[in-house]
Structures are given as structure tokens and as C-alpha cells.
Image 1 (cartoon, rainbow, N blue to C red):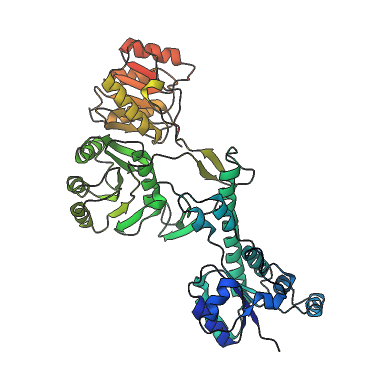
Image 2 (image 1 turned 120 degrees about the vertical axis):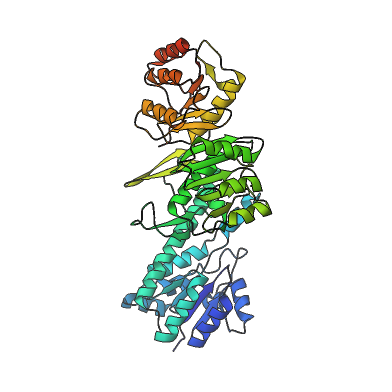
Length: 516
């Protein structure tokens, strides 16, 4: 009676020797290809070459190895069908009970800097996914192993029961199709960027993310959650951050940290962003980082309790001491002075995240996705910036240089504040923020109230147009001297007239920054 066949063809050979020894001890005949066969033979294990099983040599520099009826019929034959079994017997084809495969390192290849298209194409695995899909399809009788993490459980079950159970085969098959889907999605996205870059929105959108960690819960205690990362992304985002200290990061931590990172990336000067519930409750820039922190915290120190803090410069001791002076959840920075890190680590639960690219990379163009019931919304990122040369002064009075600098600063913050958004700024620091309101006048009233009197002499940024002049009237009453807004309302003339009546400088951007 022929031995059971285990077909093994792997690029990642971690744990291979021990696994192959275990299979041999159980009584499997191991059939393998090229480098995998050599690695197994080095362990003193007898290997049958694929070409000895098929009677056909590997060819085309290894591109064709296992693509043969004697392999795939041996995997795909339905053991419950007499016709299938008589067919493979007639052609001298042996049954294959176990398929062990992982893929060419396509993802690792394209993650390399300046990878050539030729190298990427050569690392598109054809035989591996075909073997895995065949074995997973015929999971009634064939087991498919796609990761070294599965080796131990498979060997344990074979040693204990002599067979791999139907439940295990089904679980392995499901994992296998997850793997092939993700692999194909990675290839599809890479080739789309190379060959179809002009088509922003493909007819079929494939997303591929790897589970990074399970989270204790989601937005609320009763919701389950985990964090998935884009394994091939080179962007400067929360997915690239390394946790240096503190307790386990949470769902809301990650969401808030993402908001903080994306806002602090807007600034070239030393900047501090304080985020609470995905909204900036304090933002400031200054040549001295610790001064920027002091100014950012002064915007709304009450809301800053339990916040997430992002810095775009190395965290120094003076800044670290301010951070540890009150309760906050996370601090993110491109680097930390040794002494500053020691200060921060005195807070046992403070999560310290290292993101070296902060201060070096801006928000990069691309697509962003929002889930809705039964589908997703996809749009290009709101990565559009402007400078004072692109602004349209619509009031009689032009803003001063200082006002213009504050207006542009506030405009960046408004872009990252939930709509309806009003941001008050003075001396390159936010002094009041009204976020996420259903009406713009409410947002303006909240921003003024939260400024605690600091609104006098400040400027105002609005993420969208003013539907009525009431916002301008309230701004004037509060001592606001200049306003930046997109314009585009049917009431624009009325709004501009109000600004002129109050001597307020007003500029239109003709760009809107809704953030829902």
C-alpha cells in the first residue's frame, strides 16, 4: 500500500525541518520542489522530487513545477466518487492527502525601496496559490497548511488521531482562502498603481489588511474589536507607530492617535496637537516645542484631560514634564530625548508611541474608505493645501501679515475638526474650537465660549461657508478681527457686507474641508 503523500513547497522555511521530521515519523512520503526539497534533505529526510512523481521536469526557471495533472488530480479527486477514483487509478495518479505551501515573498519584495517591476513580477506566485486553492476546495479529504504557525497543531492531531479531523480541514481551508484573497489583492493593488494609475476608482476594489492585534473592546465595552494594518504601506501613519511604553492601546486610542498624527503632519514648525474624541482641543506652533505645548494646552486644558498628544519634533524634558503634569492617554513623537523618555515612563499607563517619520512626511495622496451598512464609501484624501497667494480677499480691509499667518494656521486645524467646525486662533495657537455641531452659529458660539475671553483679537476659520451673516456679527461682537472661509453661499454678498460693516478682514479659499 502506498504511503500517504504530503506535498511541501514553501518559500518561508521557518520550522520546516521539525515539521517534515514529524510527518516522516508518522509515515508520510514527502514530495517537494527545488529549494524546499534541498532544505528537507539537509535534515536527513528522504524526499521524492515532484518531477519524479509527474515524470516531467521543472522548467522556465522554476515558473512551472507543480502545474501538472498528476499533482492537481491527486489533490482534487473526490474520494467519494468512483468515477474520480477510477480515473486517477487508470492514469497512475496517487492521492495527495496534505498540501503544505506558502507563497513567494511578493509583499516583502514590493516593500523594498525602488523595487523594479521585473523583480515584482517574478515574485508573483502562480503554482502556490493554485495548489492551495485546489486543496482548500477538496477539504473533505485534503488538508492544506499555509503557515508555520499551523505546523504544531497539525502534527499534534496526526499523532493523537492518525488523521486530520474534518473540522480542522475546514478551518484550514477557510484560512487558505483568506490567504489567497489577500495575496491576490496585494498584487492587484500594486499592478493597478503601476498600470492603471489614471483610474482612481477600479471597477472591483480589493482591500488587503493583516490583523495586527486584538483590542480589549471597541468604541464601547460591549463591542469587540481588533486592529488591522496595511502590511505594505509606506505612509507615515498610526499603523507605522511603535509602542515603547504603557498599557495596551485601545480602539479609541488608535482613532484619536490617527487624528493627532494627521493634523500635526500639516506643520513644518515645531508643533503640538492635543486631540480629544478625534477633535483638536489644542494646537500650537513655536520655535520652542515646550512653549508650543504650553500654548496648545491653554486652549482647552479641561478637555485635554484624557487626551492624545502628537509632536512633530523630538520630545525634550521640558515638554515631557508638561505632558506628565496631567492625565493623558498617549504621546506620539518622532523621537524622545533619553531623559524625556525617563520622565514620561514614570507614568505607568501612559502609552508612548514612536513614529520617526513625523516632521518629515506630509499627508500623501491616496484613497480613504468609510464603512456604511452594505458597502463602503471611497474618496480621495483631503490632502489639498493652500497658501496666501491662493486666497481671495473679499472684504474692503486686507488682513495684516500676522492675521494672514493665523488664518492659514487656523485653516489647517479646521480641516481636521469635525464639521460644522469653527476654530479661533491667536499668535499661531488655537484659543477656541467649536466642533461637530449641526448649525454653524452653534459652532461659533461654542468656540467663543470655550476661548474664555481669549477670543478678542483672534481670527476665525470656518471649514465651510456661512449660510447667514449671524456668524460674522457674533465674531465682530467677540472681537474677532479676520475670517477665513470657503465662500460659495447664496448669502455671500450679505456675509461680506457684514464683514465690511464691522471692519473685519475676510478671505475666501474656494475650498471646503467638511470632515464627518
